[in-house]
Amino acid sequence: MVSKSESPSDLQHVIPRNEHTLSRSILSSAALKVLQRLSDAGYRALLVGGGVRDPLLDIKPKDFDVATDATPEQIHGLFKRSRIIGRRFQIVHVRDGREIIEVSTFRAASETKPKQSGKDLFQLGSTGQIIRDNQFGSIEEDAFRRDFTVNALYYDIKDFSLVDYTGGLEDLKQRKLKIIGDPLQRYREDPVRMIRAIRLASKLAFQLDPDTAAPIKENARLLRDVSPARLFEEVNKLFLAGYGHETYHMMLQYGLFEAMFPEADVQIRSSESLQLFISQALINSDNRVEQGKPVVPAFLFSVLLWPQASQRYQQLLGDGEPPIPALQKASQAAIAAQQTYVSIPRRFTQNIREIWELQPRLIQRRKNRIFPLLEHPRFRAAYDFLLLREQSGEQLDQAGSWWTDFQDANREGRDSLIDALPGNKRKRSKPRRRKPKNGNSP
Ligand code: ATP
Ligand code: MG
Image 1 (cartoon, rainbow, N blue to C red):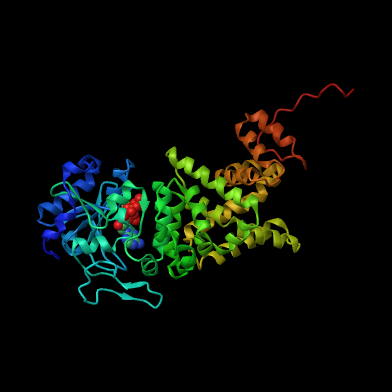
Image 2 (image 1 turned 180 degrees about the vertical axis):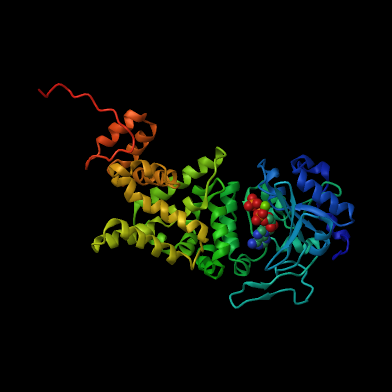
């Protein structure tokens, strides 16, 4: 064990089980097992983070995080299906069925905790970012290194009490998201906290505490120091968790969207139609999440980067490039330009480009390409994308409603929709019934 048991002063921060509303029943069986096994082995084991915060607000938690005084090696030793993960600091992922419980050792990492022992517990890089952050500490220190007061509430499996060192329970009652410690310093240590502030305020429908909000706009550009791979993960959490639309508008307002998508930001600010396009896409994916349907990063990024891809596309068309090669070049360049801010893994970039590159084909509707397009693995996404473009005011020859009708129609209906398209007769792969002549001929 890395810390002593709690001191008498800790007791002031304990809310006994009969004085709060949280019950053990909110725990997943995996979380309960992890807590119980740590506790049986003689360690302190507490639930922390969203797994405590959300149930207090009647929200079903997304995942469960556990904090303990066992070291990563000790945790790993207790659970067969566990892995020590960690670059900046080590945590342990314990797997149980499909669930992963994140277990972390109490640690002290920030100047903002009240009792600094004077030891060199962390180092700051030139911009103030934490570069070494793996010092173990007491539960109190652990509470103060967390980001927001409502995220530093613990549920103690030993006696089912709540532990609150930072005033999180009061802030939760007032629906206030407040950073722990000095806001600017905490953002400098880890700029992702600015994004988390926006994301959690949207998710929980909380007010951002004025001091917590104040430095964000001016310091949004600190995000440029965050690794583009980490930002990719954050962007997905921001926009694919069911409250993306609200989050997006707050991100724009606080200059955080600009810091991550600078090119798209410029285009959006000068085009109402692009604004509508992104808003509508995010509303749709929020609705999908609510209905339990899947939402995927490739579609999200095809939407978020479309402003910069379409701007390049228009420019190349203007230079006289034919549509298809123009779009291919524009797609490649738009994605490449984004990678230095938010890196998009290769397995997604191909799909993003396909969604875009299907656009002119879906609009053009060449007669003998209709069925192959319908069978394209990215057809559905590209069609949804096309509908969004039309809904946001682009005039695309009513291709969206044509494809809607086409998918709904029976075989005859499909034939006549194709026949009604301008251009050469279709080379038919299937036998086709002739339309009866309508009596004008001799
Ligand atoms: P949700 O799971 O709903 O996204 P969460 O608060 O549980 O919200 P996690 O990313 O699961 O978010 O993190 C778990 C906990 O770890 C947080 O509640 C917080 O206490 C702490 N934490 C996460 N990220 C940071 C950070 N960048 N700085 C400080 N503490 C953090
Ligand atoms: Mg969580």
